[in-house]
Image (spheres, rainbow, N blue to C red):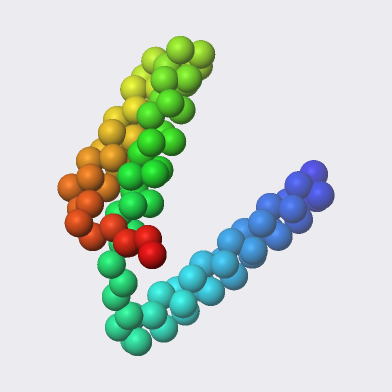
Length: 91
């Protein structure tokens, strides 16, 4: 029983440390005011990947999860295509 408690305490401590590091990084980035436009081509690529994942999940695991993944993929593709003019040009 003591082993499980000590493992849980270590996990919680690690999560707190990671959270504090993320907060420090967030405020440092906010202070520098660095704003970078998203890579819309990556949105499109991720959407292309999520569509077949949704089909596989729909046919094998669960219909609802598959439909959700397909919807996620379709929305990522729509975001990418709507901003196609902002894709990085290959040289």
